[in-house]
Length: 257
Image (cartoon, rainbow, N blue to C red; front, side, top):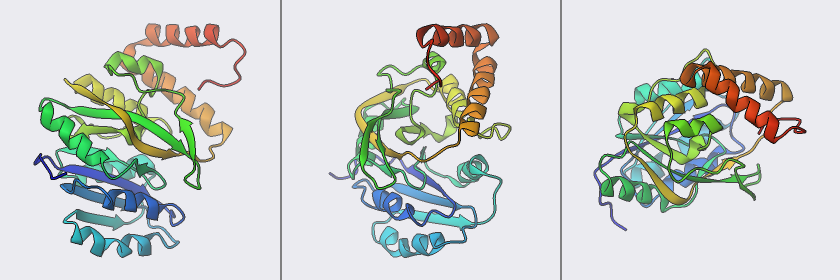
C-alpha cells in the first residue's frame, strides 16, 4: 500500500542497557510499510551493546527514507527521557514504543495514517495491545481492554489504553510531570484526553507490550501515585468513590489490577 497521507509520525523509543530487547523493537519500526516516520531513540548512556545496535540500523533506516535521530546521554529516568524526545519530535503525531515493545506488524503505521486521513480532526488514534514475555511469546491481552469510545472519563477506570497503543497529535501532548516516578504516563494520558477533540479506535492490536518484573514496592508506590493523579484530575470525591467501588467489587483481592 502506498502512502496516502502526508502526516508524519514520530515514533519514540527510550532505552537503557537494552541490548537484549532493542533489536526487535527497532526492526518493528523498520518493517513498517508506511515510511513517513521520524524515529527518535533516547538512550540513557547505556554501558552494554545498546549503542552499537542503534548504529547498526542507521543504513536500513536511511534506505527506507525514515528520518532517524538518536542521542545517548545521562538522564533523570524514563519520563525525563520521554520529555527529551517530545522536545526533539517534529512529527504531527507521537508514538512511544519503548525498548522491548514492538509495533504489532508492518501494516500498523499505515492503518494509523489511513485512520487520520479519513478523520482529519483526529487527535488520538488507539487500539488494543498484545502482551508478550521477554522471549517475544504472546501471553494474551492486557487485563484492561481499550474501550471503543475513549473519553477523558474513561480514565476513572485507570490506564485503559496501553501507552504503546496510542498515537497522539503532538500539539495536544503535554510534557510528563516529573514529580511522578511510576505513573506519569497515567497523568500524561489524562492531560491528552482533556484536550483531544476526536479519538479514533482501530479494532485490533497496535502493539506488543513486553511484561517485565516489577517489585511489589514499586507497584504499591504506583498505586499511591495513580490515586493522587486521579484526585488531581477528577477531584477527591470521585477518586474516593472509584476506589471504594473497587474494594466492594474485589473484596478479597490482594492487589488492584
